[in-house]
Image 1 (cartoon, rainbow, N blue to C red):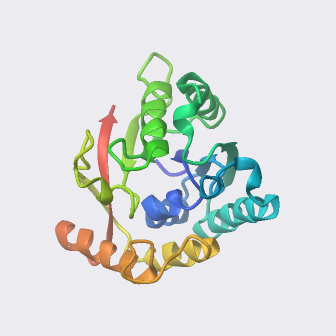
Image 2 (image 1 turned 90 degrees about the vertical axis):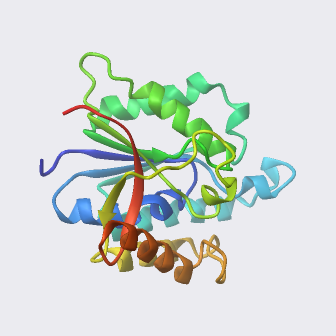
Amino acid sequence: MTDAPVLVIAAHPDDEVLGCGGTMARLAASGHGVHVAILGEGITSRHDQRADADPALLARLRESSHRAGAILGARSVQTFGLPDNRFDSVDLLDVVKIIERLVQDIAPRTVYTQHGGDLNVDHQVVFRATLTATRPVGGSPVQAVYAYEVPSSTEWAFQRFAPAFRPNVFVDIASTVSKKVEALGCYDGEMRAFPHPRSAEALHAIAKRWGAVAGVRAAEAFELVREVR
């Protein structure tokens, strides 16, 4: 249904683009209301103490999230400032409540979230919190939940953490992969040189790889968690 709200939930600034930027752009172009929620602040885990992080850099990262969302056509981008790579120090209920409020306010038909078997603990927490907040109780607007991969996190778990990423839904992003790479350029501090997975060259290669699996020129891969039709 055109204009059906879509909610993309990310642990960190850039996860949303790495995982489903091409899909976001395609959905937005077809008239869906795409909304982004970034739960974590980003970058503070690079310091021994969160307080040591430069507030100006954190502000720039939040600004980057809004610029990336605008490139992809998102109608809204919200940030919540949970401690970077320390989500396991936050009560799970608090994370659930953030997502529950988002679901109540946005009433998304479709939710995209982190994959639960990723190397990054924040991704694991977001996955579990999303499933709790979108449980199929009476009156829930959520009809489908998908998990996305994040290069340099999902594959680096080497399928040793359950659940392993087993994509079974592929979105053709041949027309929007350039938008995805452009949006990632907003996060210039997070990008790396090839062969790092968070490089433009690697992202094109990943899109081609999943495209070859699905029989298209470029694709993003998702694992369907649940769907009600």
